Length: 392
Ligand SMILES: Cc1ncc(COP(=O)(O)O)c(C=O)c1O
Image 1 (cartoon, rainbow, N blue to C red):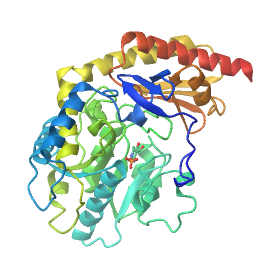
Image 2: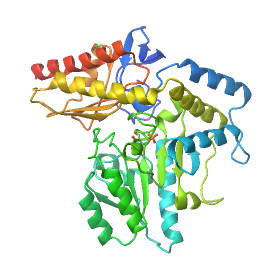
Image 3: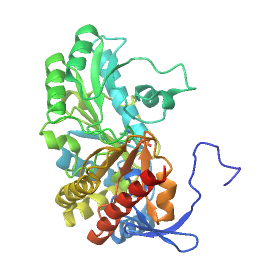
Image 4: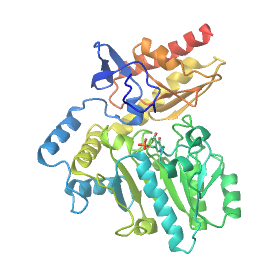
């Protein structure tokens, strides 16, 4: 659309100018049901009055000072995140990739401090951790890495959801210092590992003195029906990265650490100008307050199960539908063929959906979606799939 923007995105032919709840409006005033939430960001929907109020009030007082000084909202938000997660300390940045950069730096310094000058981090096939040099090197996708060699070294890869493969790599790689893993792979196609996977990783990390670093940039802040997806398995990570939904659209990232991992970084080791500024943290505080106030965690757990089982029931028996999977409001429907064109077909039905890995419809609805809208979403998507499969 604009020759002045770098050619980094294959954008859809649509511009939104306003939103309310789970609805977005284009320039012509047409309404769309949003089941993408800005890729798991606007969990409280668009123009949420409590978020708008918090941002408005904070912007009248202070937007930014600097990490040269104490920042009240930063401390308040860190306290809230610690209360909810069981972690010990927080470093605030501005995006998911930056939160993971913090995690990678903690792992490397943890290794260096023990005399491991070539520390390695175990990462997963099919994973996604971001687009900076270190995080794209950690990412398990050739498409993301293509054209950016040489990659950052020090990442060792195993298949996702395969504990035996992790055990083998640990045995053959004495320089390993950490495991970095998504609790549910998002960009990779909404893959939910078997129950007990994170618990087994936790046990291996304890046994071999490795840091368990969980990337909850997509799954965190309620998306899977718990504040954090690791809470489904009753474990604690050593490092936890968050971003996306934490600000409901205001850029913010957070790298949380616990125990020995929380003591790794010292003054001068890490920093960022904007990270944890009063405005972004006001958004984070308002998000947490609103989720608690409306009890969205339990709601997402319950309604997510209902939506997933509705999809399963309505798509049962369609041989081209390989699998319906997900947790909470993170839903994947995998077909036996590429289905990227469904995104445009959905637009014609005033519906916003996402397709990832070419063959998987990914739905990330906002928590504020009404029951009627949820029913519209389920029937809209099932109708789309049926039409698509009869047309080809
Ligand atoms: C699991 C995960 N990690 C990291 C990132 C990168 O976050 P950001 O795009 O904010 O840098 C994403 C973004 O999709 C993600 O889903």
